[in-house]
Picture 1 (cartoon, rainbow, N blue to C red):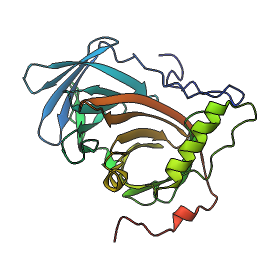
Picture 2: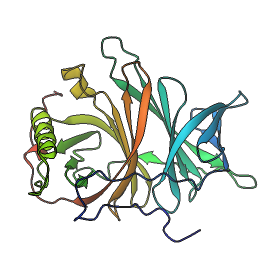
Picture 3: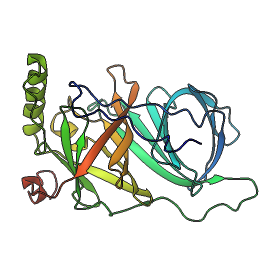
Length: 289
């Protein structure tokens, strides 16, 4: 294995305005993983080739699906695919600890709020021939509570995630970088529209944090409050695996399309820890008593 094949191609500071490129990883192609989940299920994940996985429950016929994969660090991969028309699956493969975390996200289940997603976590282990099944698991954590990271999603978009406590996340535009003088009028309008949209809401959402290992955390939230305020907005699910040592993340986005289909994609960003104060740190929540 070549050294640091999981490194992310980041955009230099002097590159024209554009988004970071989330590069797919194909290193698991041809491998099969037997997953023993704490729900009592056994799942088999076969990474058939560079484009397709086979996903089987116990001895049932497998579902064949197109997948996307990114590598989080030397030992951990994230694969995502649609199990059905409206259900997306994220499978974390941790080859250092022989562990897995699986997240099912469904959309279009609520007629009154068709954009709202729901998700379910299951932890488990990877079964290896000749080895005992690991007893340890990935687990929910409060390690990130109180920390802030300004994520650069493109050369123009910096959004600070405030890991407010063990159960919520807040987002702020306080660390947004100004647009360069040579930005086009369209880029200026896009940035102004984004600031206006985000500035008009108090962005706080229920959030789950899972410790995958030293310096590696899975973070995911559904835009539940945003969708509750306006059923035509939000409702999507963002998941990112954060390396707090390199301050890089890889993840997947999820949204419900107009036809009710589960739409997903990849994301990546570089970040920096923020120590400066933000009014959102101590502001009372408008959503919770």
